[in-house]
Every structure is written in C-alpha cells, then in structure tokens.
Amino acid sequence: MGWGGTGGLAGRRGVRDAGRVGVQVVVAVEWFDAERYTVARAVVQRGVAAVFVVGFVVVLRQFRPLLGSHGLLPVPAFVARVPWRRAPSLFQWRYSDGLVVAVGWVGVVVGLALVAGLPQRAAPWVPMAAFLLLWGLYLSVVNVGQTFYGFGWESLLLEAGFLAAFLGSDDVAPPVTVLVLLWWLVLRVELGAGLIKWRGDPAWRDLTALYYHHETQPMPGPLSRLFHLLPRPMHRVEVASNHVVQLVVPLFLLVPGPVQAVAAGLMIATQLWLVLSGNFAWLNWLTIVLAFSAVDDRVWSTVLGVHAGGPAGASPGWFVAVVLAVSALCVVLSWWPLRNLFSRHQLMNASFNVWHLVNAYGAFGTIGRRRTEVVVEGTLDPEPSLDAAWEEYGFRGKPGDVLRLPRQFAPYHLRLDWLMWFLALGSSIQMRWFLPFLLRLLEADPPTLRLLASDPFGGERPRWVRARLYRYRYAKPDERRATGARWVRQDAGLMVDALSLETFARRTRAR
View 1: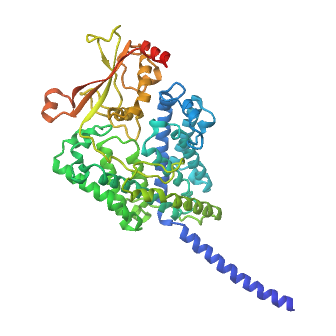
View 2 (view 1 turned 180 degrees about the vertical axis):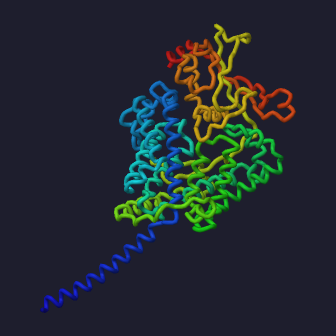
View 3 (view 1 turned 30 degrees about the vertical axis):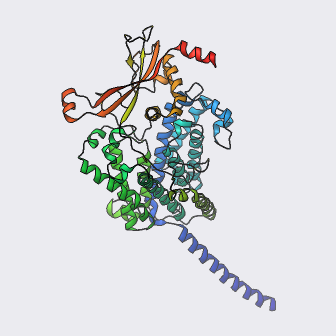
C-alpha cells in the first residue's frame, strides 16, 4: 500500500514535471522557428543555389586556361608552396584538370537540383548536405584561385551558401537564428560598402564620385554611358541616396516587421540600379537575394501576391542543436568583422579565416578619375618595326573597339577582363599572370584564345606580341553622332615591348 501510494504520488509528480519540460521544449521550439519567413527561405535557398550554378559554370569555362596545369597561374605550383592549413582545398590532395571538370559538373547539377527545390522536399539534412557540398567544392576552387578568385563576392557566395545550408527544408520552419545571421550578412555588405566610401575617397563625401565612376568602373555595361551622361545634379542625388541606403537603412534590417521589409526593398531597388549601370558579376544579384530574407510572408502575400505553403512542422531536436551550434560559431566569428566596421583602417573584402565565414565587405573606396586600358596587339611580320602590321586582340567585356556597345555579362564573371582592369591601374602583382598570358598568345593556345572575343590571326601563331596603354573616355553626344564611336581613346605609350617565343626562351635560359 505504501509502495503503491508513494509510486502513485511520484508518478503524478513525474507527469507534471514532464509536462513542464514539454511546455518548455515547445516554447523553445516556437522561439526557434520563424514560420513567417517560409517564402523568404525559398527565395534565399533557390537564389543562392542559382548563383552557385553560375559560379561553377565559370569554373568549367575559365578555370583550366587561367589556373589549370597549363594555366597562367598553375594550381600545382601554388599548392606546392602553400600548405593546406593556409588554403584548405580538395586540390591540395590531388590536382588534375579532369578533377576540376568533375567539381564543376557536380556543382552545376547539385545547384540546379536546389534551384528546382528537390532537396528541400526531404528531411532538413538533405538540403543541408547539398549546400555544404556546394560550399566545400567552391571553397576548394577559391582557396587555390589566387588573384583570379580574389574578389569579395567569392567570400560572399561562400558565406551565403554556408548559412543557406541551415535554413532547413519545407518540412520545418526556418530557424530564426539563421535568418538573423542572414540579416547581419546583408548589413555588413551594405554598411561595409558605405563606410569604406565615406572613409575613403573625398569624392564620396563631396558627392562628386559619380562624375567619374560610370566611366572608370571595371567593366561598363550597355547603359553605363547613358548613366554617365546624366546631369551632374542627378549624380549628386545618386551619391547622397547611396549614402542613406548604405549607412542608415541597413540598421533597420534588425527591426522585424514592415520597417524591415521597407529597408530590404530600398536596398533591392539600389542594387537593381547598380545592375543596370554596370557589370559586377553576381555581387548585386546575390545581395538582392539575401535582402529578400528580410521580407516576411505577410508582405509577400499583401504586396506581391505570393502565398506561403501550408504550416511547417516543428524542427527536430538534432536540427535545433546543429543550428544553434553553428549560430554560436558565427556569433563568435562576428567579432572580427564587427571590429573592422568601427576601425579607422577598415579592410575592404577581407576574410578573417580560411573558411570564408563571417567576412568583411566593401567596394569602391577609391574612385579613378581617368580610364586607362591595356590593349594587346600581335603581328605576323618577322620584325616588330614601326612599319609592322599590328592587330588588336578583342576581349569579351572590357573596352577595346571604340565602336562596340559594351555587353551585359553579370551575373557571369569574366575573370580575365576584370584583371585587365587591375593591370591597367599599375598593379605589379598582375604581371605574374600577364606575361604568361602573352606567351600563350604567341603559342596560339586554343583554351586561352577561347577566353577572348576575337583572335585577329584566326588561330595562327603571331611572331610578336606587345601591350600598349590607352586613355579612354566616353564619346560626347556630338562625337557619337559624328563618328558612331562610343569611346574616344588616346595613345598613352608602350607598357610591354614586343616579345617573341625566342625572347621567352632566352629569359628562361637566363633564369
């Protein structure tokens, strides 16, 4: 009887205790789940995956001539001198051009599956595994990509892809901690860009930066000249608006509700303006995708007419534990970029760890006043005399032919063309790849020639190549009507004197 009474009392207390624990777990899960952001999750997951697809297509089309075994900066030579701990990569274990192709195709296929939403229909671990695979493969590319992959949007894609892995599947609500980390990412992208401008070139502070930017930016688009020709008061309004959107508006991302959605909308509109005015690879498109993470389902339904699916289930315990651990890691790693934002010596597009997680971002702290282009020429003549017939190589994106309308390539990234812009700025480190590039032209190397828009010699080897500098500016309306030219250029002298295969052979023997 005593045992029975005691057991019954203990049982009832146990039930009550279990009930309280159950309520606590439910409350914790309800706090963890952000059920109002299911559409935002779908946009972020599919959008980030689409950018990964673009990135891996670039790998398939450009990696081997730039970085392959016979590339301009061969990966085998890089991994021989840089240890794994400084550049973790699959290619530290083994490099072959065939492995690069395999990595590229796996990235494209997995990315397309995520764009279609197939892994998201399964348990949360399936999209998690898919995104982590994309992140790991692309990290392997970036960490051996050297200067050809030294762009801030590489780190942005890696960080975004890593966070997207922990957004869950359609079966569960999006984790609130991951959403907050996405908002923190967008805030760093925008605020970092705004602060680097305000602390940098005085042209941003006196509102004159856009007098020059559209003409001197790395790769103009088809509308860039029209943007440049806007009235100067309009340019000043653009700069002032940019300061507001990048320095003030991002702070409102941390205020959930309509205010947050309005802040996201302003940033999206600004990014679309940048898409129209230039070619910045996937920087603008990825920022747009990430900004949509701050638009909740009510806004999607009311303003855009997009309705969320049915209610998602509670997140399983293992998923909650993994997400909270990853979120805690990202919070710890946030110390370095947070400190960087407040630093007088702010770094632009910096990674504080080899995994490219929680990075610092920024763009155009300095604005060029004049545009200089490197023009590469070759000749079939036996001697590089003044009378030699020099023919110009055509690049796909960078200005060359003054009559040609620039094309819109973004979000696709023309890596060689972008580095030609840095080369023209006088960056000596770029000569490490440029001289091998000239050698490949002398060899009429087919993979290298496919990176170009035109080969004036139709695949035949030139006898000599050289590089000249030209000053470029947009043609004024009357000049455009008179000549049909979109650019006016002026010879600024020789950059690299005439080289031949024999010249390279002598240099090799001398070393």
